[in-house]
Length: 424
Image 1 (cartoon, rainbow, N blue to C red):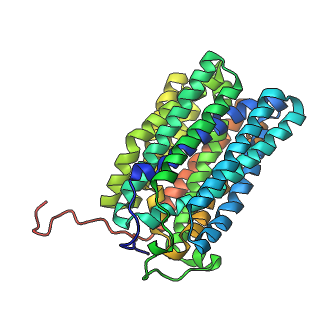
Image 2 (image 1 turned 90 degrees about the vertical axis):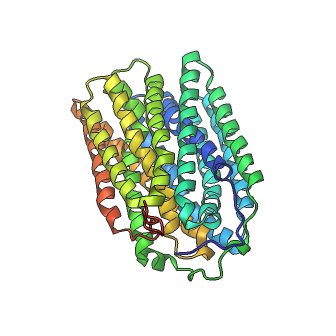
Image 3 (image 1 turned 180 degrees about the horizontal axis):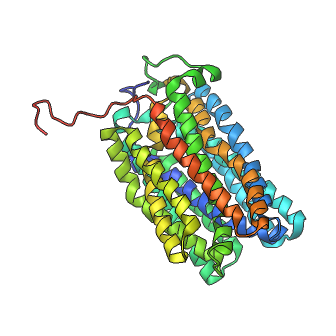
């Protein structure tokens, strides 16, 4: 485990996390609202699950490969911010291509232009991810990472909340799809500028002289703290991506909502409100009691919510379960970055290692393709069997993550509950 150099620049946690706020708004509105809606318009109802799953998986391939490679280059140059700037520019260009395709083109020809824009979005966003992710372990001491991770989780939840509100308003007012893409671009750009202007380039000076050796990729996965953090994050992400891409279809097919875009936005609002409540609290608690107890509670809550959604008697009950899921999800995200940062073996490879760690969240998106096919197959059998299969698999992934996170060593010991004089 590495420690922060006294020479490393300090940064306000809200400024550091601003770009993550914009990214959260960006992905919620794009992945959960616009993408499902546009896929149905391009390919029709019969193949919507398959095409949405394939599109998500293709984008995930970009996110799987790019962050470790860009991160390794960022470590060699000792620079972070130029990579974020370039990635941001490509991301915005991709949004423009998607907006053009969604606004002016139809049929499969328009769909492939839309896919091209989506790939540019994935390239740009993931090009910036690894250098940006390296800033937390590089600039924040271990004993404060829970707090910083909690702020990041809170701003992520607030970004998602505003994304859901925006989707609701756009749907309610029946505004053109171009409006949503403009909102995404602005809400990505402005917070990114806050981070870029408010964070000084850390450079090589922030790598402590006592840093451990840089491990090869094979050695990194033989290093137990990183291995188990990686595995458990994969499992939690698999649970998330077993359900998340198909929420809009769940609202239409199971809950029988006449306006599934709007009802999905309301469900996401409930998830995000729960996340906001638990995010900052969870991060601070993890600095005192350790990361793993928070994850035990969070993962169990998410698994229970996924199963109970299958027997929800109606839309109001589903909204209550979404709020409950959000409480668990917010607590998990509040310690996610802290746990990943704690597991890094060397400050000299922060961006590469965080890029590899980020793969644990991105690679499970590839499961959306087989999950989408399973959804379509199960529903073709009748009785919404597809949703039963997909949601049950999600619960199993969450529970497996809870069980296996016990193997993660306690790299940052919580402070004693008593003061030096022995008083509480």
